Image (cartoon, rainbow, N blue to C red; front, side, top):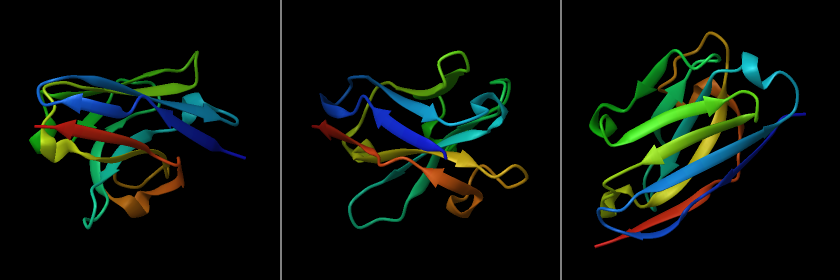
Length: 124
C-alpha cells in the first residue's frame, strides 16, 4: 500500500521561499517517477514539476522554470519541491503523486497515488 504525506506548506510573504517535502511509504520508492501538482480555489489541478526515478530527469511547467526545483532523496523515500521568489498566484494546495510508468508527467490522469496536500499561501 502506497501512502504519500506532504509537509512544509505555510504562509509566506511574496518574494519568500518554501521547501515542500513528500514522504513515501510503501515498497520500491526508488523505482517510481514522481510529480508535484497544485490546485488553487476554483481552478483545476495543474502540473508543477516531475522527476524520474533516479533523479536524472526533471520536468517543469514552463512558467515555473527558474523559480521551482524538484529533487528527491531515495535513501529517505522523499521528494522535495523548492519554491523561490514566491508570488501570490502561487497560492494553492500542493500535492505530490506517483506517476504511472509509461504516462506523461504533465497530466493528472497519469498519476495513481496522491497525498492529502499541503497549503501554500503567499501574501502580497
